[in-house]
Length: 393
Image 1: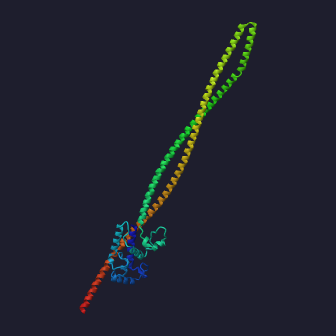
Image 2: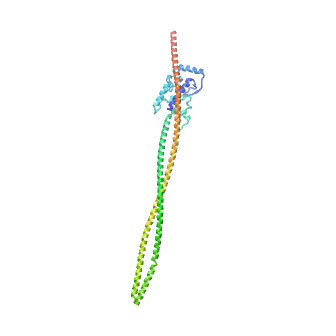
Image 3: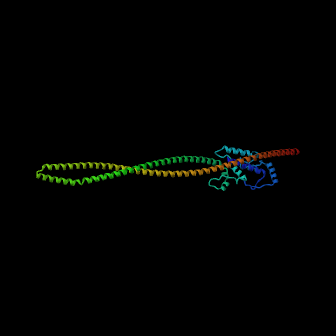
């Protein structure tokens, strides 16, 4: 992970800086150093001193600052510093659920590093950068890989949500188009039915006017015949009486038959016209009922069209809401993509630092081997001097 790469790079730079004499402690407290360049003579003296008591005493600087297994200091061999650090890193990699390294050792190592305050430290949520610096043993090694995994998971989830929303939007668009087609078809049907109803209504009104005119004509023809019929009856009675008195019976009988025949014909014609009028009235009532039914159907169609328009407005509102949500999700997706790109850039920088630190560690190992050989030679020389002194005594 990037934290492990940072730790290894910091450890390597700190060890090289101490070995070359670019740093020295300014106070008794652990971890407070100021970088000042020493003179060449002091550097040589420091190298000689380090070659004499390097790792022998528990109070030596190397043992106190580079002990990963004992934060309080110890007599650890300096040749195993890098190996112990790599073992700790491997243990840390093996344990994905919890960190196995000693927090005190890591905190001491971070404090010892002169550039640790300048490096990017992950802040805890809701806390400032100064707070994170004062609690580096808690937040300095927070696993940034978990944030990247979380960002990748959120990115995947955002992609899934966007795909689902796009599919839902397509379904809604198809539904809106189908409903638009249905509305257009209903409008055409409604227009055709309305036109047909208007034509039927106009024809029925014309028929009604014609029937009404015929009815008025029949009434005019029926009412004036009644007084004339009564007058003819009275005249016939008078004629019959005069003819009876005159003794002309044959002429009076012929007048009565003519009047009776005329009255019968008029009655038959009036009955026929009455029947026709009744039939026309019944047909007119039926047509009026049909017109009322057509009007109710037209009102129902208009109400259905209004309901469809309201549903279309609701669907358009839902579509706008989904489009806004899609836009917000796309913005979040772009933000997560930027965070992921930034994390990848940090990982590349960490790899570059790791490659540069590996190039520094090799000469450091060679220097450590030389120091060990010098220490062994000095130990042999001291032993030989002691033997000579013992022999001299």
